[in-house]
Amino acid sequence: MKIVIQRVSEASVTIDGNKVADIKTGLLVLLGIVDDDTQEDINFLVRKTANLRVFNDENEVMNKSLIDIEGDVIVVSQFTLQASTKKGNRPSYIKAARPEVAIPLYETFVESLEKEIGKKVQTGQFGADMKVALVNDGPVTIIIDSKAKE
Image (tube, rainbow, N blue to C red; front, top):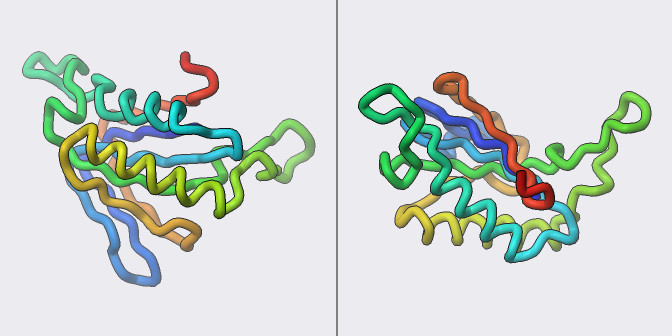
């Protein structure tokens, strides 16, 4: 499981002209799932997302977490995070989990994150053609792979 976390001053998701998610200060999390992802991967990434100190304190030092600032979150499924570009110029998505595997893991990730931060997590719609808009604050963008645990 991979996530791309972007610290945002605002973000939204629009599907078919309808805004389905809209936040101010917080995180936009793009989530890519593979077939062998488990609850352990979810637990690791949820803890990291909620507790990663990427928000500024009173001294303008990144020393506060999402929980500390009571920020909001949008989680968007993104199978392209699992793209392989090793061979040729067309990415291969063979490692990305099929919907029957990915959807329950995606939903569990969102539910687990809600419990961890104590508030509702907004989402896109799995498999939909989404228009994601954001103002990346910083910019701060962090990639975490639950298999690498770096």
